[in-house]
Length: 470
Image (cartoon, rainbow, N blue to C red):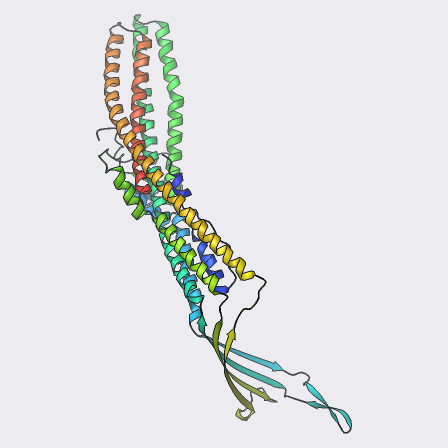
């Protein structure tokens, strides 16, 4: 079962922005939405193809250590954390509308040519120069919202957006944990398949040496010698390919862990041992409670409900208290004395009622209602996908467990059959073809066992991710 589905369910839809400043910030926050006795690994799996590195550049990892490193270094988690920090900032920004807004300003004007005023006098139009060379103005303004029916829902929606982003961080961590486990088991599989091909080549080389001895002694045929040489040469390309895949899997693990490709990894864990698991219903219930993307989507539905309420209330009256203090000076001196200053203070109420906006707010309410409905459909879809993912992962785990049992017994049978075939061939009781078939059967049985162990580990990792665990 591929781990890609889990990353797909993390993507969320992005709503269109609303009109009012607080609602616009909220809409930006909404973008937060839319991962026994079998073949054992060696105690240390060295990164043999990596460039030589100092001892300090070698990293020893078990599965859980790889998961922990990926969750702290992987870009997917880091981006989710940055988005969560952005949502926390939006909460502060939207909530600021409920607090007093205080601003101060200062201006200085140098009158190169002083302004004049005109008036009609007895002698005609006369001009009077006003002001001085230097004009100063200091201002202090206070604005406090007293009544805004849309502010409460907007602040609630912003907090819900922050909660959704926090759940999204956990969803990213779960997805990255799945990717790390899968990449770790891919490396173990690559090493195991290299071992299988190396053993097959060693076996074929020993048989070639044996046939050469028979041929030199006159008891073997040229056909057997040629057949053994061809078999050795045929096994070299699969070994080269296995080593190449092993190297690629190591690089993919380093990429998942956020490590440079020239670092040397030593893996200490083997494939997980098959064990009995809980019932499918138990995993379904756990996923319903623990899946972070489900939690985030449920929060988004609530968020859209609050956003819709805020849009509906944006057409209601808004009342603000506004107060100002101004201190001005006009002087011929660069630093005016105290008597050149004058001060004024004002206070008042600003009451605004939107009467007609060309149905702009009606369109915004319609958009918010559509966004809410869309998020509800998305939640329903995600719930069904989660159930399907849990069921598929559970079935894959059970199938892999059965394949391990079958493959382990088959390896024992194939190895015993090979021993018999070798004895028969040594005593001249069987042909080269019979021995080749026995060796091929052993190689295939060992490959099947390694693949089954890998698939069990990946299926187990997928099941953990499907229920929201790391």
